[in-house]
Picture 1 (cartoon, one colour):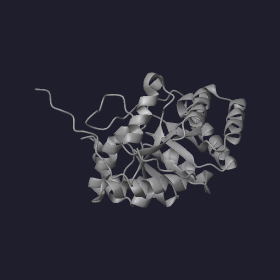
Picture 2 (cartoon, one colour):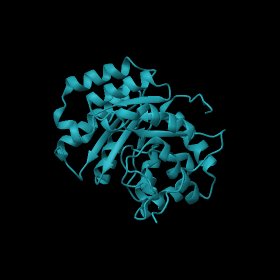
Picture 3 (cartoon, helix red, strand yellow):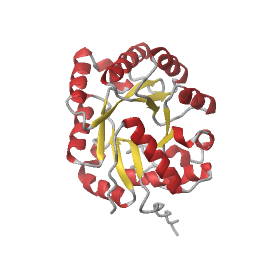
Picture 4 (tube, helix red, strand yellow):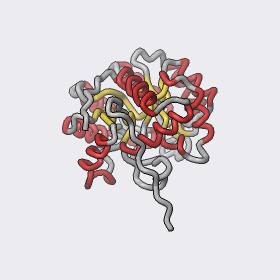
Length: 278
């Protein structure tokens, strides 16, 4: 007999979660996006930040935020795409963010990816520095992508700082010492569904040891689906599995995790969630 998947965890009606990092513009969401957003709301996800990774997705992110009240947007160029980008692209992104202040709450995801290296490392580093300056000029928090590039990422952040509007290390993948260095810079750490994986021990240690005031949660949907749906398309309602694991690791209730991480997101991205009870 096939083993049944456990139901999505529940939280009390007076609490809610924010998915701080999702890619709602991706093709795999197009056919049933309305259902996905309704399901998220029904499970206590009151807000979703959809992330720009290139010019096209940044434009789409803003359109989604304009269309759906529970969605906010960011703009930026992912390290995979920086070789295809020039100053005119950045200027258009600056205009996009500047003209949509009610919807654009952050700049990113930007950073370094030495795992796949779709762009040369030197070009990635140059683009990262340039985009950090753009984020500061726009007075927006930065969303940092860091894959197999911890040392260079930290050096560039330290040299480019301080960041008056803060930032977040998205989909955190470092160890406890790296987490402490990131927090010392005034950045938050974002915990993805990897924390539920059997091989996610290092992230579990980080999630258990870091102060809750420094943590936020994300799906990174459609990627990194938490157990028990690992390998399937991720979606915002599955954030509850991540919250449940962080609650267990922190020795707190899922409501306490939801309340504090939601406060952290709203403080970092400077917007207020008006809770809608489903």
